[in-house]
View 1 (spheres, rainbow, N blue to C red):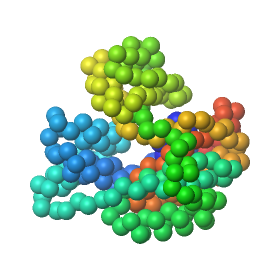
View 2: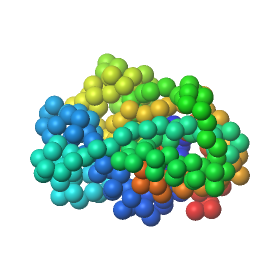
View 3: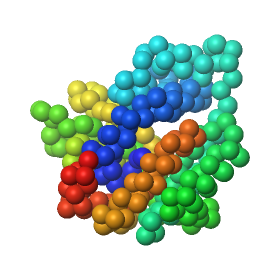
View 4: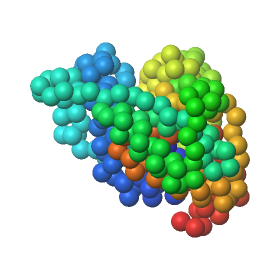
Length: 253
């Protein structure tokens, strides 16, 4: 799950990722293959591939798997990589907006699976465009909080590189840019000696909707189910979890 929902920093999310390491690896490998196919295996000329590899390394994907994925995607092994990106729109419990991004080699399978998972977990599908207008395409860089690196340090590093915002997300910081400024902001962080976890173009909600604990549980259950699909690559949502609700969720974990 991606986006400014605070979901990405909850203990619940960490447990989900830890419990699905194999699926997480497979999706990260798929990203690497697509990036290598689109821009080639040369890291110096393919910033998208650099970011895909960075994210995979941060998630402890073995380097041998990463190298094979680069070669496979770039066509250096004779294998064919053919994935389509498809975006589905829908609503979760209490009208929470969802964009479901799939990366698949079988469009019909992906569509059927997303529809089934939405229907069986309290979600509803929406017509194309009816949800997407609530989101803007942005570059988002995620940085885990560490001793010695402050919000001001990050802001100073990226201010002249096109950053629009540096936000404190609890367990880390997020740098938001226009997609065209993502590489420049990422490069500025590296030059400043600031490590980052991921740098990706994402769909960021224009307006957040705060959820109560019952809605949060239902939304998380729906997202959990969707993330079980091999075809679902990213989920973007507009919900926000208030601090009091987050504390209750943490206690449940």
